[in-house]
Length: 89
Ligand code: SF4
Image (cartoon, rainbow, N blue to C red; front, side):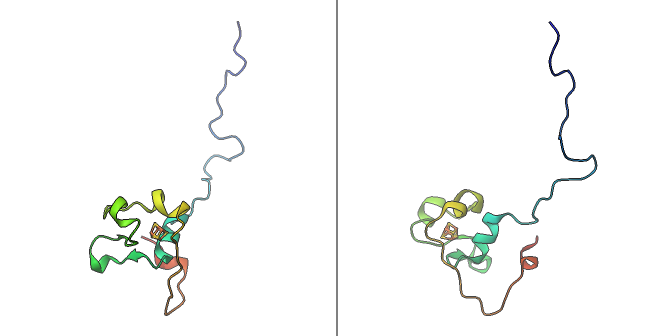
């Protein structure tokens, strides 16, 4: 029996040498950084300081796991306008 797909195309539609556009910082991290419950690195490990999140998530905080679906998110009041550039590592 002859195989129907005997040639594998790794990424159809994407020309070789051209990577898919990936944001420098994920949406979860952007949300985390703009959340008023974020505990700044000056106060210890950077994590979520919300009273309903911190006891569960702890200080080894992973924004990817928490922030995207978080209902506690509150935009922090920023004294100056920040651009996405500030969040690059
Ligand atoms: S888990 Fe929720 S409250 Fe905590 S930093 Fe992320 S969005 Fe904010």
